[in-house]
Image (cartoon, rainbow, N blue to C red; front, top):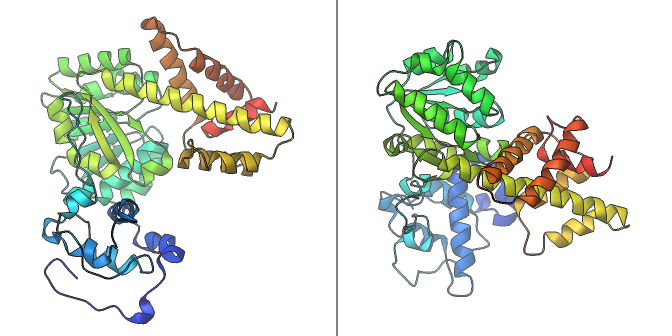
Length: 413
């Protein structure tokens, strides 16, 4: 059943059991919107289980004209079929409410989630020219998704060869940060640390030389609030508009367009970036004045880094006391701390796979900055301080350019 009311038949031999073929069909269809639709349908079915029988007809027919489920025909052809029973729905409640896709009011004027891509069914890319500086683990996935969703993007990277792939995908090449900013309406940057962020703005042929009144600059790097304050002041002193928008996630989430964006600064820039944030992330939050996003992101990464160190400590203590590390993981993943993060990081450790998804040197930097922020607020951060020492040990063992999970190696040397 399509949105215009027409019907297409599916041959019986094309019907496949849902669970055995789910991953295969998702890989074939790939797009972020398809994955979001699958997640939304499964979430609804999970909540509805035991309450009423639910069908593809039930899910698909209600309010398709509102385009609240992206590409319904794709969903219907691939979510085959043994998990569903075809019978009329018991309720005509709009699918927007039943799938819980539409964002709920947070009750706060300082925090607002951006519209989900799934709500609109598709992204209408902004007609503003987008610049992007920095094509590392996070930036590469972000730029790829901006291009896929139809944005006009000009790229620059310190190592110019990294731009080649994106030029092939339709990006334009900027020779310097100043040139990118002068060519574009909104320029994003995503670099490694506060020094790199400052150098990009204040250095030779830097961003500041390309800023003109009305130009927007969006700092996506995870840095300290003092650096954000400095960059905001110099950008706005030239008539520019400034937003900080660090991201929570990993290389894989960046590639999948499922990052969480935490923004602060110029609210109008945040709104102008709406289609960009929808392309690169699953949700975004606006936290008020510049500096707040940096503070929030450092706290988030402090918790994540400390947790990763604790998991590594548990794995190595299990080994030291003669317990099976795999059994430890199996038990952990059946309890309240079960998560994709725990499962993936632990499996990678057990396989000796430390390919970077989030650099160990970067999570150590975030811990260091979070501890410093605690010092400024006269607030104790003893857990983060202990974890930071373990990461420093891992760096001394040449693990800086491996994944954060390589903190494990600090415990076995």
